[in-house]
Length: 149
Image (cartoon, rainbow, N blue to C red; front, side):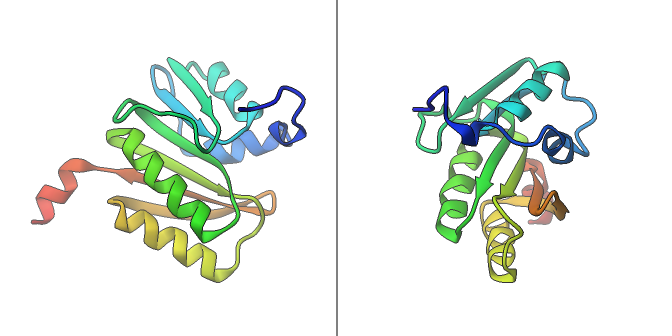
């Protein structure tokens, strides 16, 4: 459970904007934040999201109920595997995922995150740097898997 005085809940305000780049229309979206990040939560509310939920890494989530999942901080391959699996289950069939690392990742961790995203059915994977961390965005397109077959 998140503690109200936990300093890890607060990030530099500008980190919110880099994370949400590329998501112009968030109105009426249901968003899940895995891990503490009050800055992103507030920015999502300001942008008109229908529902914003923040869970710790092991919090109980419902399957197929959100349009966007933001994983606030990943530092290892095992954390990435666990978070991406949980995010995949929470997303609707046409959902989006944002994964942020805690620091600029090694080449191995970047490749591992991209590989895990592909293995979980994500496409349109984009990685960029923002404030000393990597931000990965991906989309889940259920219909695209039928088109390729």
